[in-house]
Image (cartoon, each protein chain N blue to C red):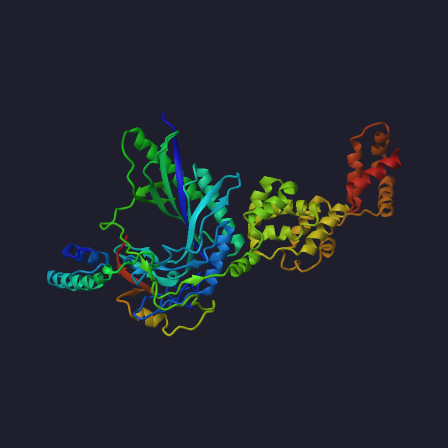
Length: 473
Length: 95
């Protein structure tokens, strides 16, 4: 069987989380808002309305570009892309066809491969359509939301790499703080171009474009499906048709979308209503300074302490990473807290806690310290950690919480010895003491258990064992 | 640039409106005249001249990212549309 190598390029639309839209002063956060409640005459494209550029969106675009290791084009312009569709009432989308703000860059995947960025540009989103039987409904809340469209070079060669790339983009954009990154609500949407060619061939095959994917998983599945579908066609001696295809998560298949009667003819022209953007290198530098710590920083910082696998898991949670970054002066603390994050917080039953405020640096450091001093067992540490999220407890300091839970281990040797003596004086432990002295090691466990019981679980078992050994020798 | 019945019909289709034959004919001659007038510029030698994007020499015309009250509200804007349903704009089925 012929082996086919896929070649994949991805376009990604990122909704920027500015307060207002790209060209009008209305609320850009339409989550949980009623349809058509975040709109202005500009979004309706009423005659005579002029777009008013949001400076913050320009800054966000610069930051997005820096996160993509891209050159920022100091001069950029807007253009009109004409198409007639009810999701954009003015009959054209304002975009940057000829002079985009973000130039060439690259994204480095966790496996070390680089995907080059061809360019990225600012544009406005269109409204949301819902299709009912016999009619369609239009909600213009999303019309005019600022987008950065990131166009990759065709540097991706497998479904899993396509997934890694989209996930890495999500991380870069959320860490840069330019988007809410809520995929469920369409904050990032992917169009994937896929072609296949025989291994070793210098020519690329005919490509298809699967549009509007909104999760990493659907990107991966859509690529897997398309590669299989195209391979089958070629094996049968048929041809792949260049077309746009839609994806269904439910069926796991792509389907050809009815080709429009009129071929795309966007009649791009310079947007006369908007002045060009000219940035100084100082302004770009200022944005660079504002850029928070990026995934690459966390990777190099935590690789040796936590290992690559744990770092990749935690990277999906920017808030956990920035919390760990507060602890960096103490590697042992980073390791213990990272393990608590992954074993406790990311456990199925606790994921809702991720929406809560995280414990403070002081609470976490005290927790680690109590554990290191044997005042808290690892189980006790987990219990206290969970109470950091308890609305009744979270404001209290670590020691107070541990005391209230009664999980502080008794390490005071004198106090422990007294408890041990009490236990050794009890008639029910006499036989075990004799057995131990006669060489039966395993009864020590029974005696330790008795002491733990006597101390109401607060004794540190390893200290108890030590004391017992010295007293019975 | 050739302007004929076909060009006008194509543009009408892209803009999603219907033209009668009479309207098409009239537009062919109007647009021919306009394009012809503009074409006089072709006589000029523009080698080495940067394209003009705009005639006002402005740049960085932008506004702060602040929500402001709008001069028309949701109901007024929806009232401009032909038909609505639950505050959405109802349009013929599109795909």
